[in-house]
Length: 600
Image (cartoon, rainbow, N blue to C red; front, side, top):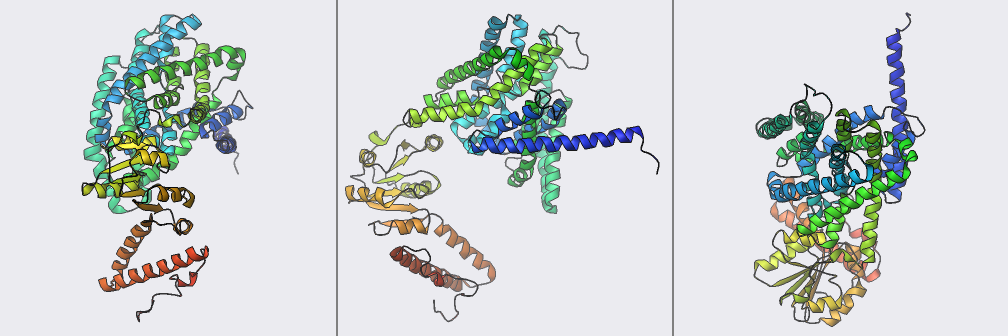
């Protein structure tokens, strides 16, 4: 056998090293993310620590941090595509004031404040201070958006405003690059378009992607949908993201912005949920690798040589951005606690800072040492975010449940015939059925996000714990004809309901039960009604399914009545005995179907 050529041997060695690097990075990430998740500090900090540990300034096990960063950048592109899928164009239009008002003010005011701070703290020239201060105004889309999506807050008022600011920050990258180019001391690069042309490219690219979404991408997915191959959906989804990002890259624009627009164009597509499920795994792993790469590129020698400056500037960065955001949020009508949360949520530096620092270095505005120094400051500020959110939660608790500050309690609510406690998906249906007949209803909920979200639909929901006697009296429970407890979960116990029944004997009390165990726990109370939250919808679905098996309507009705009779019999027996296993022989099973002779 002929010996392998030197080139082949080098390729084989590179493949082995890449495989080893992958094992090391993923192993370290898995370990640290598990540990940090266990302590409630989130995955991002785990990825950053893992990268710093295995990177060239740590144990030196992996050295290709910059190359990995270029690949993992695609995770941010996928993230913006998924966020776009959740935003119907009409909702995006509704957010225009927050995007172009609050977002513009945040970037401008924070950027100028940080520029001033850097100028006086470092002695840099005004141009260098501006080239560093403006990028520091940007926050971490890759860190904040996954956190909002995971917690379900992306659709809350605070989440929507955070997203609006992040979207404008992404739009602002082109103007920031233009400012850096205008300040440049380096010879002009003939391959880089001037700023006015980049602005034109941005408008043309957005219009082009909107038209492509309507006339190319949606028809493409209709064709793919007819084929019914899951793998083809994955390919089509990745093709859409890559194509939109490639167009923007060719025009020297933000690839993430292109992917976001493509996502928005598919937001009302019937294939939206399937696309989300197919793209999500790629997004998760690439975004994790992005933070590993950021950790690997952390210049630990720079931090060790100037620890006071790095840590002090990171603290100043967080403080300035949080203070500016708090003031702007209050200006835009947010109450104090939500303004504080928004400020802390977006107080870190962002990943686009690395790109803009490199541009400033190429423009000869800052030295490589300064770019490395402020990249370390950004990384440390990103690592602080989980601790800041922990602090925010602790401060809320210390303030005595301050999350409801600024929200109106039911003390001044108008007189009503019914009080609905818990205005979630269950309570909304109950309340709106009463309102359909013109019955006056007072709505109470303990979740500020739900209250603010309901306000956007014109519903007045009062804040408070609707199981407290003093709050119910203030809401007019002594005159109400019905009290309807529609909260999720099984926290509404017999001990909490008994005083309510005694205090308001004139009112019919209805309770939403979590499951049959919850019903058993409430047995013996004089309730007007107790309703398992999914029982009726499950029976309706079962009835519809039976109809697909060529059964007559009479037979379907017979089966439904038999099931309801047996379920009621079992529940009564279980409540008397306190044992869930009571009358389990009455359950329908493969060996115990309903007999055709009518016996149950």
